[in-house]
Length: 100
Image (cartoon, rainbow, N blue to C red; front, side, top):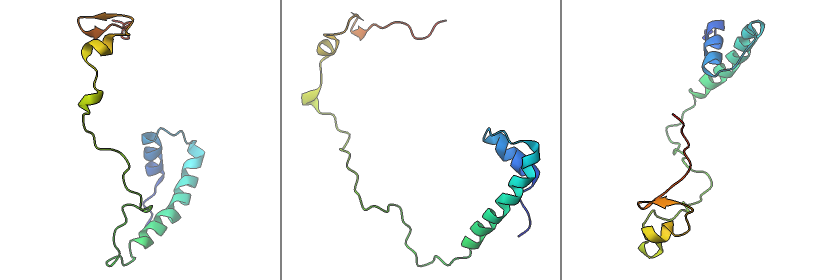
């Protein structure tokens, strides 16, 4: 495998990841990443034609309920505002969060 990890690639990836790498370490990282990429390239040669894709490994099912409106548990607007310290025209009144 020809070297695709150059010092320029290391510098670019570090910049994208917002990682500060000292200039004297850039070549060291390039040398360390090369065997890792070679290993991943060797995995691409593995025959996976008869392997079923694995999307989930635990066998657990989704335990979340359906997103359905339960009208029996709904508050009216009046009930929702009943304990509000301040309300106006059917809305909660709060302190400003954005200052202009």
